[in-house]
Image 1: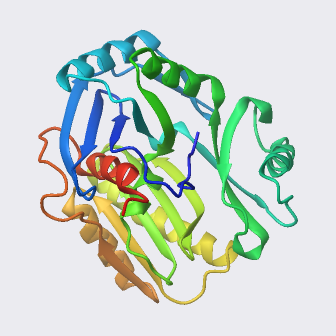
Image 2: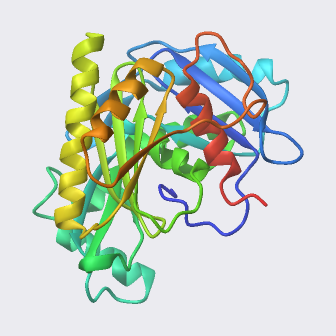
Image 3: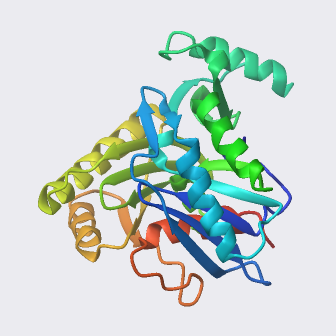
Length: 304
């Protein structure tokens, strides 16, 4: 599994993503800079369960039924594809990254050993990914239980589809951000969830996932509170100094306006609204823009 974008070759042009009630498919066009096609199929809302380490259990039959319906719509199953996972499927941990072995296998063993006291399960039972060499001797580790992810892969494989990469939606969105020497705080807002990613020198150094209150006004207050907490934590623990660019990926303009009001009271914080541009994703009623953007991001990342 490649949770973080570490590949140098272009990823597949095909990508899938899922949430509580939908399985979505997206395909890049010939220029690889826009989704030329999307399709969707209904998916039982209780098809997966969460636990202390993110994804705990998958209803294989429910996923297989939705995937079969989707493959019928696209006429032919792609051989290779990426999968954008709901942010709640993964957990993240920041650990001391100093003096890791250069060999990846040996480094993985060291990282798992350091996770022993931090996880409610055996480190051997998780898949993980990370980018060594973060500043201040710290490193973001993103992980999930191996078995339920294997069930997802096996279900797709039974339809002839090889999932070459699985990554959470928030990290897929980072591929759509412009290169910047300024630290970035990305807020990905869906109806009932908030994901926050801090990037320094282009690398993710902090990832947080939070459920949102159902009440819109409470949700807006919650978002700005978590933005403030995350920014303060990143400045203290990751040594972020000076200006920070906040990028908001949200389909609700009221929530963007609330973030802008919050930023006005901060020092050195500039708010930008993530928008992929006209024509880069098809219009799809009943599908949140953020979800479509993540499909674009995971397929477009690394593309020339």
